[in-house]
Length: 267
Image (cartoon, rainbow, N blue to C red; front, side, top):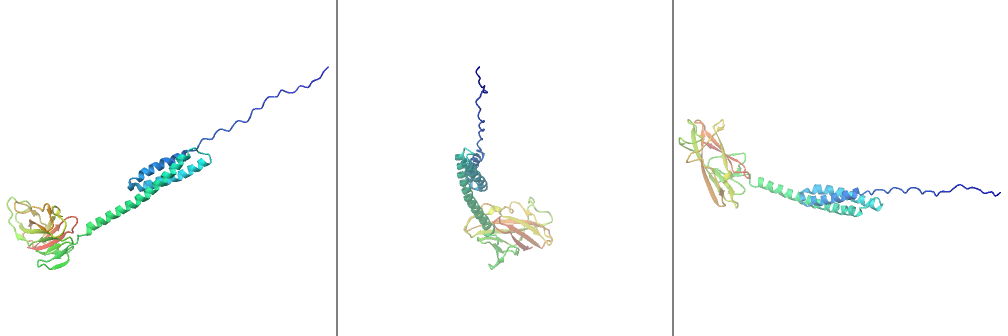
């Protein structure tokens, strides 16, 4: 009787499961590309330099980080990250140029405004006899005196004369008196002068009551148009004053580029 040994049946072993693939981390490279593009576009209009600089810096940092991921095999968009780095650097350069240009333009504009505001605003007083005096700003001039500005614009107010307002005159109150003055503007400078901006305010008496300007067919017409270099313009104005008023104060405002000047006229 023969004997045999029974061996257990062998089955092939299955191998260990393969690790799941890791998803590419492409977010930083993509963000760097987008920020770089937007940053460059923001840097083209130079006044947005602040936005271009911010986006360019962030894009540059994200792009460098994205390239590091690509080198380690964690990302697959190395090209996008590299482009983001380049565009971020360009946006930063544009922001610097924009900042320099913007600040230069603003500084020049402020200087021009300052020059325009102060260039000829403080007039000198010149007496009726032609004698030059001190600055007329903050002082009162007398009848016949002139205010001479740095741009050679001269304003002269004559002495007051009694005026008989017509019955249809506007601004005259029955029982009050009326006085007329002649205002002459002489432009001895090199630039034309816009006389349409010239205005006048008047007060009368020791209490400084408002002296209404009188308008009728003879007086009250304002200055108009332009006074060319070497030319003059003349206007005749009349003002309504209380009967007992002893003086008439007239303040002439030539416009934004020239200080107001006050004449104190004895009635």
